[in-house]
Image (tube, rainbow, N blue to C red; front, side):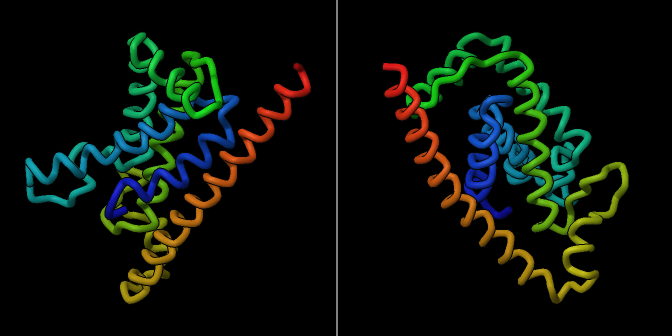
Length: 183
């Protein structure tokens, strides 16, 4: 993706949809974590493809980095508190557990890699296998299809922003209805 904010729509939507099992702030933050590799490329400029500095844009290394991030976020109590507090601030309180945070880190990283594999040719999603099977498959092996496929990815990320807002409103309404019922 050209800009990580596109990832917030899909990651926010999926995170809210599965918030019972995964920690939403860690899930979203793991999406951002993966693009640290792209930011590093801007400073290091090693001369090889931008998504291959540390192989964060792979299911293997990206998944490990995301899971480790979730583990660290759980054991650093101020980070865990921040995750719980941020959910309370948006009206959807939750309790962070080790499993929910590690799983959120792993799945958040994987979602980022999966989305980017549709957009960027240099992603090695199944590294150490060097080919981007998904990019080649979606573009039918034709580079001329690349721009249209990239526009579709951006469009779907924007659609998920709308779905995220809708899901958030519905979640708040259901929570209010449940609180009203118990009052």
